[in-house]
Image (cartoon, rainbow over all chains, first blue to last red; front, top):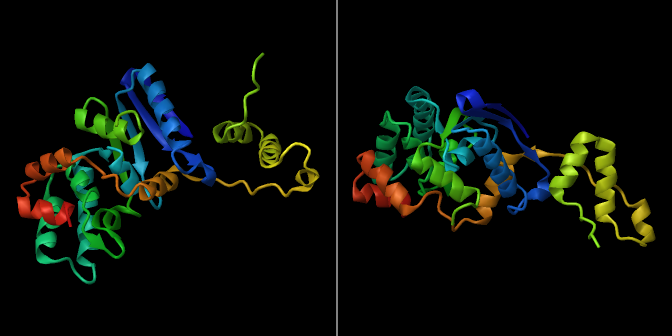
Length: 160
Length: 94
């Protein structure tokens, strides 16, 4: 794991985390993220940034409460997601297509969560996973935002 | 009397990062049983890492029944984005 702390700015940047494949099942990932959170708390960190990427990061970090760092970065991502959506074959049914297009047209970065959570079946997975897997975006987790903090705490097993 | 701590995956990873050779030895120790003559010749496990994102994603699939966000959170975002109830149901309750 590599991360940088900037306590004066109350910020941290998570560069990368690697684990042994045997670490599946929450036996390592959750304690690791919980302990990282303790370090961040002790250092007064209120904002964690990262590059959500690789094969799964674009989806995984969205599910962990991270958001695009700015609304402008969300709009860049949304443009790529719209192109992916347009290339879907077969296309989505009209109601689902209308709904997800409305989500992708939003200028609000919180719309990322509405994309990630989309459960419409697509190509043996969900629409949210299909759109976000393989994507890369600059993200941040702002612990001063209650909804983001609650999502993260639930994901790392500190809240039911 | 203090009980000797058993190695954990995390502990082994730390050991491997500090000293790769020591980490490999530690892995062999974990995979063997004391007194088993075959363990001395056991082939060491391959030692490779994967991005934590892959592990986290796999864990989500293993708990597929766990929703990404609570229903309240989805409804709140949906209302904020102007989705109708039909659209919310179409995307999140297929």
